[in-house]
Image (cartoon, rainbow, N blue to C red; front, side, top):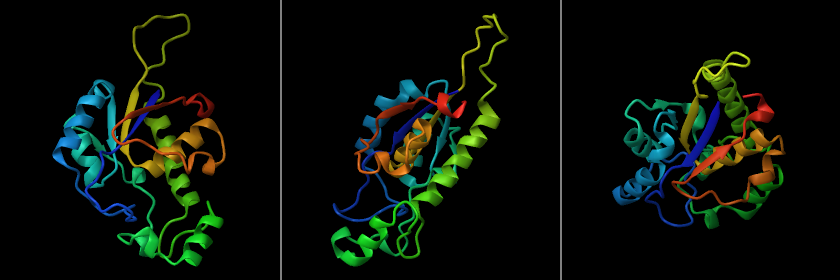
Length: 192
């Protein structure tokens, strides 16, 4: 099985606003650019999407049969959703940041909890798709491995990279994830 991830197009939201689970739109032109860039990866793939509108708008253009997968949602920032990052009390932000991956924003989700739901999703992919491309030993049956293509968010992409690489969850936490670009993961360490 091959797993390819892509972050949704840039959403319409004021800069500096925390928007993990906010259901935001994307400009049509941003979706068009992402479709053109990602269509080669989606062709022939099993496409999954976060239920967020910014993911659905792209995924359904790539594959009208794309599957909604709630476990691909962004981190739930709870009371911080829709709040400017600079309006969050520094002591609250520091308590969250210093306690990662096990602490959560007020009323939100811990990074470790997001990792658990994404691990569960990977396990379900293994059950559902792992044998699809396997050939008998020595055979050349011509079947290719299943390609899973997921339209999701920066947080899940960072966590899925860490899980695939077998590294600590915070390894990729501060790294930028570009909008609308494909990221292929090597799933061999997970046996997928």
